[in-house]
Image (cartoon, rainbow, N blue to C red; front, side):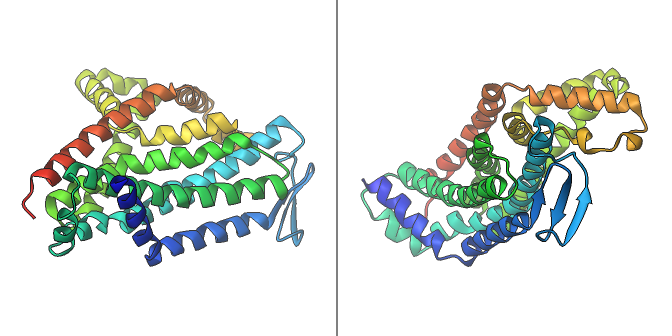
Length: 308
């Protein structure tokens, strides 16, 4: 009961933050912008028919067309919540723990008959609820736009909601560890961003080795990159899983044939994308959450031992 009350109180505090409502407004504006676009069997219209472009690539009556429409929705979600939104949410939640452990605030909380481990986990879960609500608003609004305006109902698109929360958790654990260790909001933000960049670089390096086989001749570098990819959270796999489950078209499907100059490179890119989409969700999410669990336990251990 105490644990649940802590989660509720922490979530209420987050509702009072301006950044919470800023993110809600962004979701509404993105959904409204998407609503201004329409897809028909022979054309795409903008601003409710003010401009029309003849193409059958986005025909909602065909499987290929629906896949291309789904790919647009996934790209928008990846950009708005997967990049911009994720950065804003890291900034928004960075001071959850630093404010929590400030002298005066933490003294009142520690006086209550509840263990420090429960205090820590309650605050951590409350942050996840904050992000879950943001992802739900965005996911439901864009899902309704796709069905009502775009003529494409994709129930599995709603899986983007838990996937985005999981993606955020990969980075938030780093932010919390930094916040508890340094008691600095700035440090928590930059360390989390730096970790995100490092995860991205490792995955991009591994992908480059798949595209250019000659790079794999550097055996030590190759094994190091593969090991790090296995250990670190696989942030890019979230986008691949979303594309796979929504049956979104591949990036190359949206590129005109005349623009595909290097046929060999295009073939390798398609092979790599197919391989990434076929990733085992239990493996990619499970190993990533194992990394997160280790960081969370380190942060909780530090929180439990510090003298506030």
